[in-house]
Image (cartoon, rainbow, N blue to C red):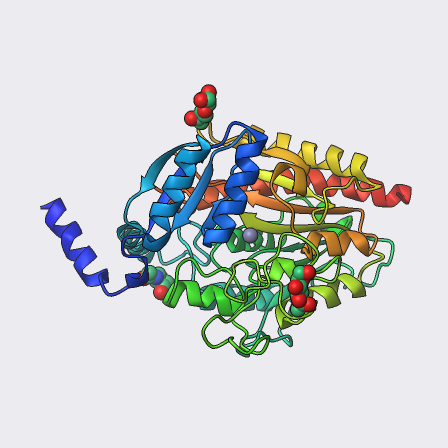
Length: 429
Ligand SMILES: *[C@@H]1O[C@H](CO)[C@@H](O)[C@H](O)[C@H]1NC(C)=O
Ligand SMILES: *[C@@H]1O[C@H](CO)[C@@H](O)[C@H](O)[C@H]1NC(C)=O
Ligand SMILES: *[C@@H]1O[C@H](CO)[C@@H](O)[C@H](O)[C@H]1NC(C)=O
Ligand SMILES: [Zn+2]
């Protein structure tokens, strides 16, 4: 009976995710530096999608289309890299995700008091309605900004939270954003969780007494919406004005589009690539908005956190070349304190966080948001890779029942970081 019901669910969803029929994910285990380098270069040449990049301590997860599979497995064998198939038909994996999300929705519908449910992934309108509701309920401490727009003219809504209306120049500002990479669905709920904890759920006054906050849950609303309606693995923006081939391959990788060593390393000039940096820095309205916020408050923003998934990592500059920042000591200290706090609140089967220079522990990226923020003099700039569970059937697509857990533990970590950041600001770092 249960089986039949499942089959029916899948049949109904069958029209979706057609593109991913026959796609696979592979888990790879690289054990030498040489294997990592060769795999990344072969995979990049083939156009393989690295959902997490392999390194020496952590397995990688590769999303591979049917045309790439034979050559990739041949290369893996030639390089002596251990691998196993993780999912052998991505379409059915995605159908199963939809099923889980629908099932979760049923239980949510029964509880009419829920205002922003964290037991499911939410489409853009639910997130925006939540922000509207918070703004009207807390008019003295929140300001909803909605005059910036994406390429497809969606508002990029963000929230400023302060009990001094951002007028007290002596208060540091904390900036946190999510959703620059559309498919990384676990990021936006962490930001809305923080909004809630600073308004409805505020039980620590010092969070507003000691700092002001700017929170952008979905930097890339066009891409985010597209992942719900068209293509679950869409990562980039949806702009079509950056190159002549843009109708076929729209969009730019937002996290390669910032003006700090833009297009100098680890990007691809192929507009169809997942790491295409655009035809000039800040070509995208979405990244330009972050630039404007960072510049407006550059002297007060003491910590910038840019949320991604997955891989359980806290990464800091410089990402473009792996060199040591002048503030590497603070970055490492605060990063480690946040990771410890997350670890303390985490589940035993979640992978532990690693902390370090982004280019050395993950991979290089020129034109990233954290490098740009740091180049403006913002002392603490971190990219988080939130957790995924590659051991389970899923991995990239963290099951909805874990959303709340990730929000909870990440917020615990961020709070510790904020406290240290504010201390630093008082000392005049
Ligand atoms: C990766 O391979 C090494 C060497 O063969 C092995 O010791 C290690 O357990 C493997 N890691 C995982 C996660 O399978
Ligand atoms: C889940 O419920 C929300 C709120 O009612 C709705 O907007 C959303 O489209 C639903 N999602 C699915 C996959 O049914
Ligand atoms: C980006 O860098 C590559 C490699 O140096 C170069 O070929 C390409 O023209 C650059 N792209 C743009 C838009 O300047
Ligand atoms: Zn990302």
